Amino acid sequence: MKYLHNIGTYFIMIKDMFRKPTKWSVMKTLILKDIDDLIISSLGIVAFISFFVGGVVAIQTSLNISNPLIPKYLVGFATRQSIILEFAPTFISIIMAGKVGSFITSSIGTMRVTEQIDALEVMGINAINYLVFPKFIALTLYPFIISIAMFLGILGGLAACVYGGYGTLEDYIEGVQNDFIPFHMAYAFIKTMLFAFILATIPSFYGYFMKGGALEVGKASTTSFVWTSVVIILVNYLITSLLLG
Amino acid sequence: MIEVKDLHKSFGDAHILKGITTSFEKGKTNLIIGQSGSGKTVFLKCLLGLFTFEQGFISYDGKILSELSHDERRDLRSKMGMVFQGSALFDSMTIAENVMFPLRMFTKQSKGEMEDRVNEVLQRVNLPNAHNKMPSEASGGMQKRVAIARAIVNNPKYLFCDEPNSGLDPKTAIVIDNLIQEITDEYQIITVINSHDMNSVMEIGEKIVFLKDGYKEWEGSKETIFKTDNKAVTDFVYSSELFKKVRRMYIEENE
Image (tube, rainbow over all chains, first blue to last red; front, side, top):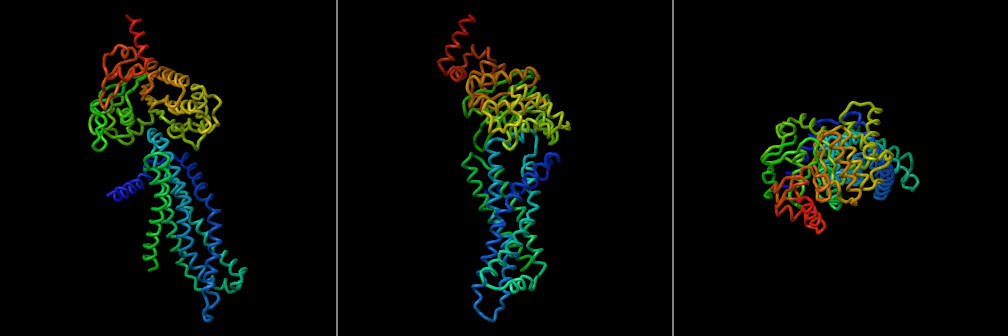
């Protein structure tokens, strides 16, 4: 029953996010601040993880090819497919659920605890629009992060493969170019946009509707991470079945 | 005038407000007092429209709160100022930005006009040089004054304060009390304050509503509270020896 109540409240929050919009002069400042907090500040960690995980994927693939009949360019091919189809959109989104999701839940939750949300409501401001909508707009730039993750993941694979002595540059590049299906990029970015929406709204929901004090802010951040990850994984399964199945 | 009639509010099985009827007049400082758990905060949140209620009505200058449309309610709220117990300043904004916030949201003033108004109200609350400080850099008393400045910057008709003196030293508490009373008088607004602080009751209670277990137990002023025989009120207000002596002296002087 509690789950049903939460799901209903979540969808009412989504509806309220588009009601009674905040003045544009105020909203644009909020959007720019959220782009900085959610997108720009995540670039470093995303770049670091993508580069090294790309390298590990290339090494693992190379080490598992023992049959001489399998072409060497398979390392580049497997790395590209893993990165574009799953690692960049899904794995990075799970990491972002931890980084950006916790930030959103704790910042909104702290505003709830310190009565700042009550202050907005008393002033007649639609607090959900004021707090959640700018995050939603900022995260429409999320595909930009995922593009960088894709590029750096493939580059990390190349560096590990060539400089680690697991294959040649020519083989890797041939593998990356081989049998490329453009729809896979569309699939990856459709997923990315859905994950962006989930990343903006589920942590906001847990922050906005939290009750209690400072301890509960921490608990809400953890719960928010768990549920954001669960929903991302479920949506990933559904969208993969629909688009590639 | 704010009128409240037969207000009932429950949370599940817990009946918190049990038929409160009272009114608050323009230019007066109204205090709601009572023990913890007596329903003061719930009553204030009902007045603000943050809580809905099952029975009764609240009207603002003849307009019944529960009958207002979304837009009318929004208009009404833009005429309200609220000072929260913990000040509730936006911690990502400077003090000047906090005070300017209602102007940015609800008026079409130019930046210069808004800055002039912010300077004026910060001067009014005796914080002429605090513009660029962050709320975290301000003391409790300063934060309360900023909260008052933010509440009055848009010329509200109604000012609500939830325990404005909590956590303040006695001297700063008196400064805040006097400031609220001066502003009420100067701007001719309706001020409703939730308070535990007996000093505030004696200093600025032009009208006092005493709540007990969700009922309105007593209503009067700082003058009549000395003379009342209501046991619940005297037990609460004169629980300390100091106030018992003050009461005795007041009665002796007036006899």
